[in-house]
Image 1 (cartoon, rainbow, N blue to C red):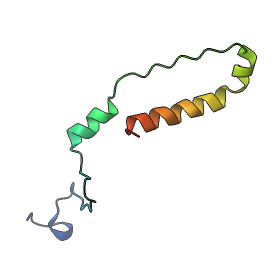
Image 2 (image 1 turned 135 degrees about the vertical axis):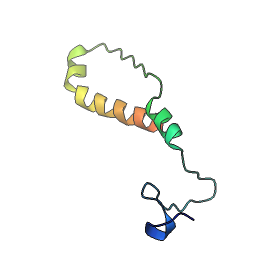
Image 3 (image 1 turned 90 degrees about the vertical axis):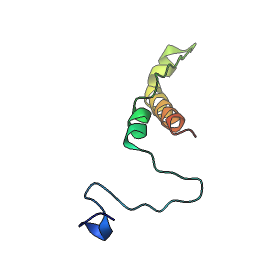
Image 4 (image 1 turned 45 degrees about the vertical axis):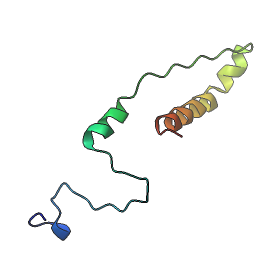
Length: 73
């Protein structure tokens, strides 16, 4: 046990309740996930104007897909 702090925790520690199969990532592991590799996306379209009109939706879809991919889903 450490001295002082909430329930014997140091100021930079927090309690965690995990389910079976879950684990806590170390600071190094967490930093490694933030530095994941590059993502390349190629879009081919026959109708450039239609693509321009939907670019906000396309950008949103890409951002969501990349986010899910980085989380391994």
